[in-house]
Length: 181
Image (cartoon, rainbow, N blue to C red; front, side):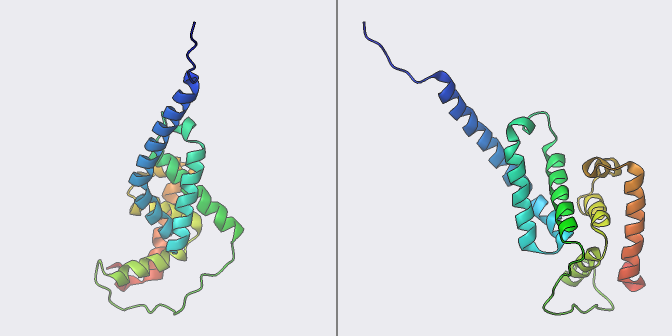
């Protein structure tokens, strides 16, 4: 009688399953990274910090990947994790200033779609509260419905509508009438 030694099927199955899960996660990261990094930048005005927040989002998601990979809206989940990280960071650093090498000049007439327009909008966004900024980024930069934004931020629809209206009014005030036209 000769005995054949085989490895337990669960070990090989676990490795195969883990590799498949890692491939799924990698595909999700490749699809979502640019969108999340852009949203993070609009929230914090710093590309390096935006990259860090995006990586932290993926780290948290990877830790829960086995639980969330099926039956979960991964795009919504990733936005919620990112916004929570932004809110947590803002709470820890509230009252801090954004240091710039030069004070940006405001042009009297800025052509639509120009880099100056984008910079002016990002600067104006930075003057809003982090909650208002989140509503505007999700609602207008990412073009989500009011219901979706409410779900992502964990607030009511009326809170999203109120914050959106107030934040847009403040942006109009900050940017001036010439800018709005």
